[in-house]
Structure formats: C-alpha cells, structure tokens
Image (cartoon, rainbow, N blue to C red; front, side, top):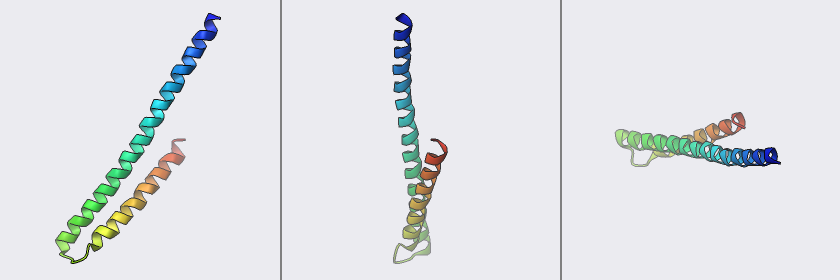
Length: 82
C-alpha cells in the first residue's frame, strides 16, 4: 500500500514538472518569435530612414519576412521538439 502511494506521488510530481516544462518550451518559442519580428521591423525602419523613402518600403518587406521567418522557426521547433 505504501509503495502505491509513493508511486502516485511520483506520478503527480512528474505531471507538474511536465506542465512547467511545456510552459517554458512554449514561452521560449513565443519570445523567440517576438525577437525575430522586432529585429526585422527595426531593421526595416532604420533602412527606410537611411534610404530616405517617403513610404516605408523596407519596413513592410522586412516585417513580413520577419513574420514568415518567426512562423517557420516555430513550426520547426514544434516538429523537432515533440
């Protein structure tokens, strides 16, 4: 009986740790996506100022590329880290 209770406690702790691990994994992916999008958008803004365009051409192009790159990295992480 005591052995069964110890096993149940161990199973509960494993489930709690799995939840924390999943939270850390998905939070890391979200932060990674945000950083990619931020850097590409920031770079686009800087390039637009440098090129002195009247319309934000580089900002639009690089921000869209950043979004696609962030989605690609997230999908790659989901597939590999399952």
